[in-house]
Image 1: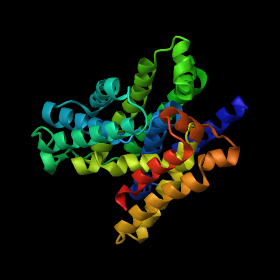
Image 2 (image 1 turned 120 degrees about the vertical axis):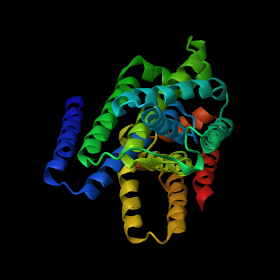
Image 3 (image 1 turned 135 degrees about the vertical axis):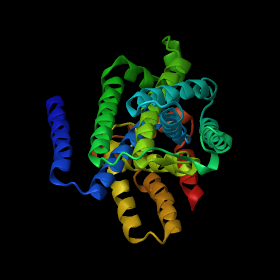
Image 4 (image 1 turned 45 degrees about the vertical axis):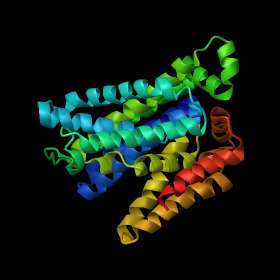
Length: 333
């Protein structure tokens, strides 16, 4: 079974690696590159929600921090793009430590609200600081090589997937996280440090998101608070993970691909109906938690850990979990 999964992963990577050899259309490469990014955002969001059991409504904070770190270091201090990516991930990880130490002591809706407030606070800071360009944003030098960003995003997302798979599914760290998720009091009785483990998981979800943000900033060449710190970034990652299936890595990948394909098709043919897209996004969350409580992957495979772990981790019953997720999805309606 293990060899089969390895072969499937290698086959998928082989197909993705040769796509630019068959098409040089910038539009196609852009679509696939952005799909890679959303896969990465979905699986990193699931680290907290699915594996740790904490709803993070501020995941865009780390994406935006990474984007601004790359932009500021390149434009204000003359750093090379390659040198800014580790700094973007480090800054996002440091922000997760600073924010996680107090907020991870909270549970349920209190933690969700705290992370959402963190995202709003960072957005307000970006709006008033001169170094970030304020509401006018920042413009980066264009680098018109779509193949470069295609391969870079693919490699970073693939590396993130493998790292998370090893740490959460094969290493002792994954057992500790799942133990905290299932029974925090029992895990503490065994000598585990809940604050430390949850903070490590928070950092693990934040660092790759910061790197994705850094790549996005240079790729798009223009960022502002509304584009890299908006609620919709967190919400879409959440929809993708919930729809695909929490508590797994393959579930958010499937969810990200399907939801992003729908989003691309919608904006290509129905771009005049922006409100309709937000309504559909909120409805997808509501319908998923009602009819596919374990996500698409969980429904197909019979895996129920995602919903169960989320319920236990946040200390809510099924109805409360559904209400919490539905309300977040309905914010934009």
